[in-house]
Image (cartoon, rainbow, N blue to C red):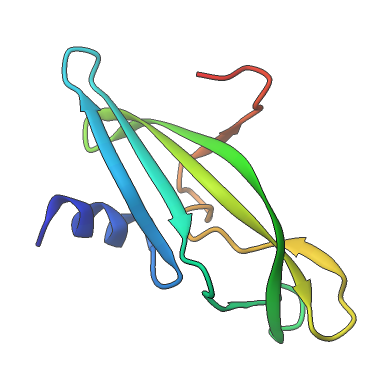
Length: 112
């Protein structure tokens, strides 16, 4: 299993999510992971489960202090979804955001 595949599996990433790049700064014990979704990927509405299309996307940065003994930063393009039914617009479900995942969202105004 490659390094990228191991990290993707640990984060729970499946299509249409993909890791674009991983960089390590060994002296700082820092890992930056670029996560995106591929064009044409399908998502489901988090409210009703119907198909939803990407209406726009926003950039988010997620942080975890100890991820494989590194401080990790996930740099993510998060899709905003428009439900084909009438649920409206919502963010896609993020696989690494689950109970006890220890990842926290960094407000973009703070940067990293």
